[in-house]
Image 1 (spheres, rainbow, N blue to C red):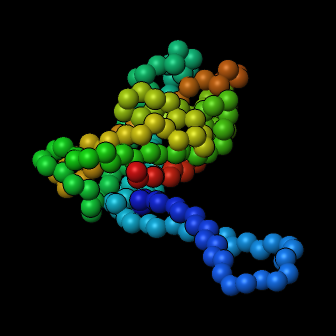
Image 2: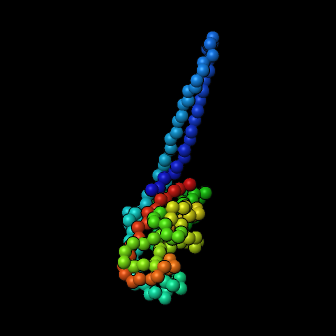
Image 3: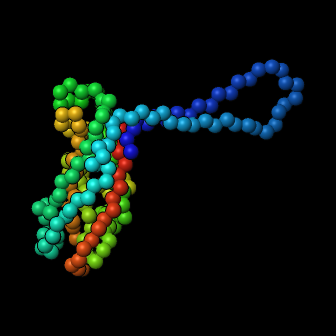
Length: 177
């Protein structure tokens, strides 16, 4: 989901005329809404991605090896952001929230394998916690595309390791400010 979000609430009370008797009770008028403008589209290849983590040796999982990291990107296209060359003008930031099954602050996995969890990091090394937004990012311009770069890696969840296949489902929400 991408979009520029602005929410506003307004309450307006007007009084006029002559009232001979006091009016008891109350009334209220509540209004809310959102104005949404698309800043960019998410490239179709970035909407549903599958990251093949490959075969992982026990010793690299236990040692929390960075060699296990697999890069992936969210690619933004058709952006209405102002830029000159490879520099984005103004204070235009994106924030991504990854969500999935929370297992001790990491993303839980399903399947035969046991003792592992998935960790996602942004390009600055910030670790994603399921359901919590990462800090604001400025995407990397590459031609007419903008990219937000991340890595995924498997780590031990301090449970006994068991071999087998696994899957993890992670959703993401993209906010533009």
